[in-house]
Length: 97
Image (tube, rainbow, N blue to C red; front, side, top):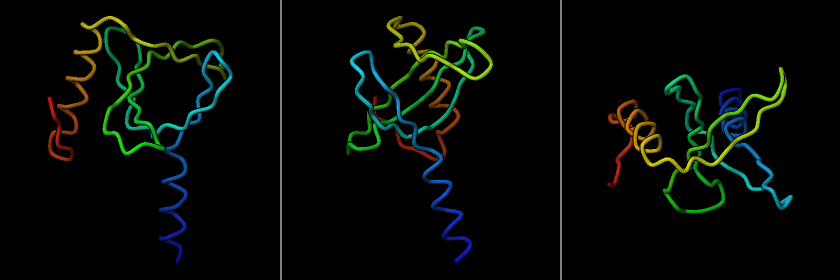
């Protein structure tokens, strides 16, 4: 029973609720945080969809307790961060290009 409770806690801790600029909340499954070119990027997947599409957001520290998450539009950065993610999880996940 303790193992089942631990699994539920781990599963719940991997869900992040982010609020967009319109004040709407969306749940995402946290997959990884990758450092690239001196910045950190979150790798997320929508939690309430069957989609396998991932989302990459740049972490922008505000203060000791607060971070903003910014959309990444630079294709070079997106490709590089996604490449690192694919390499890390090549033995665990199947990727479609």
